[in-house]
Length: 178
Image (cartoon, rainbow, N blue to C red; front, side, top):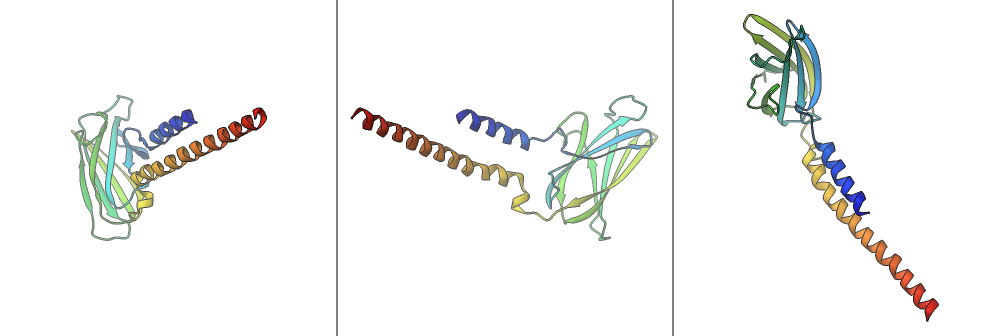
């Protein structure tokens, strides 16, 4: 049982880990570049968000480290809550990414436009993302904390079963030997 609990804890911890940038939203060619967009958290909710971008040369020249990456978000409903973000290496979790950390103001469908510029080369990609209202049930930390009482209950159940099983065997031994 102890081995099972250890494996379960590591499995839950690994399941909550993200790749370098989060959920893959798209990988598209944009001019002379291939642009890959990742977002966290998953699902996207109102509140803290991270948009990470990987930029590569379209001709197979590798990762582009010195590109200027801008991300524009506008609500698909046509509201005036436009966000203009500048992605940087400093905000990213990997040296191959550029990221923008910010707060999503509203739920709904958002248009995302990623513009990459390097010298005279320019490329842009467009997609949409769905942003859900904030809910504790969609918050990753909620589920990580909720697991703790589950493990306490499993441990207590295991101890109770062990006591009942060994108590029964002990009574049987005394009855046979007595």
